[in-house]
Image 1 (spheres, rainbow, N blue to C red):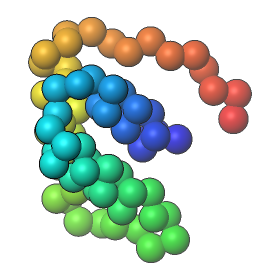
Image 2: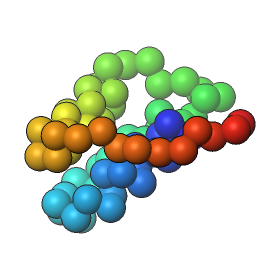
Image 3: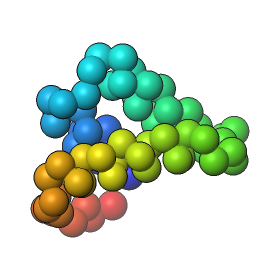
Image 4: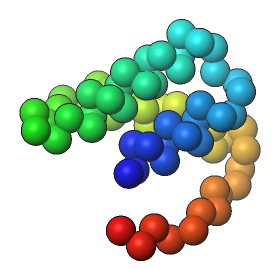
Length: 69
């Protein structure tokens, strides 16, 4: 659910190129693979960099409703 939340937030921003969005999507899809966990830092670091880039441009929290699941 967290990867989906990150994807929905970053992909709707409108500031990333198609190439960067593809990279983010691929990284998140690989991170989602809980049956074969990804344990290296590179994908997590890259996603974190994009999240921080979003934050520094927006300087606000993203409000969302609590998921009952």
